[in-house]
Structures are given as C-alpha cells and as structure tokens.
Amino acid sequence: MATAKQTAAAKRNIKKARSAAEDQHSIAHMPAKTRSALGRQGAAVAQRKRTGASTPRTKRELYEEAKQRGIAGRSKMNRGQLMRALRRH
Image (tube, rainbow, N blue to C red; front, side, top):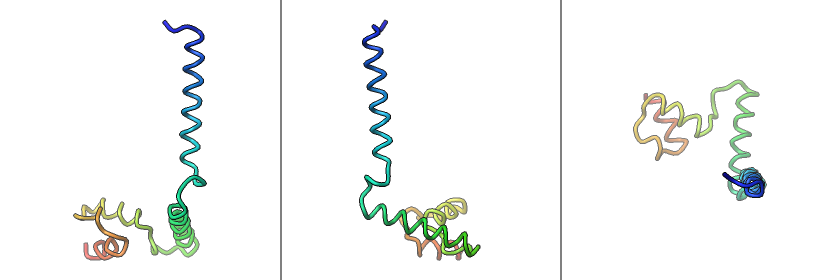
C-alpha cells in the first residue's frame, strides 16, 4: 500500500503529464505549415457552408467518401485524384 507522500507525488505527476499533453496539442505550438493548412481547411468548410455547395470539399471529406465507396488506393491519392475517382465510381 502506498504512503500518503507517494500518493501525493503520483497525483502531482499525473497533473503535470495532463497539463503537458494539453499544451502540446495547442495550435500555437504547431509548425507554421500545419497552422496554415488548418486555416485553409477551415476556410474551405466555411465557404461551403456559406454557399451551400458540395464543393470545394476538403481532402479528408473526399477520403471518407472514398472509404465508404471502397475505392482502392485512396490513401495515396491527392485531393484532385480523389475527386476524379469519386466521379468515376
């Protein structure tokens, strides 16, 4: 059985680990390339919502649809290739 001192130390360690994990996932600590990619993706989603159009869809959305349709080789395709493959099937 752990002593009170050991239990307190374990709780502190858990709190520190949780705090560190939350800090690492913030956008501010991501590379500039990743931040700008997230911004472009968000802008595309916002544009689609404003216009009500089904395009331009993000690569992730196209990938998910290709996955549902069972298109082979989808993981190696870029956005344009995914769009063409979805039109063919």
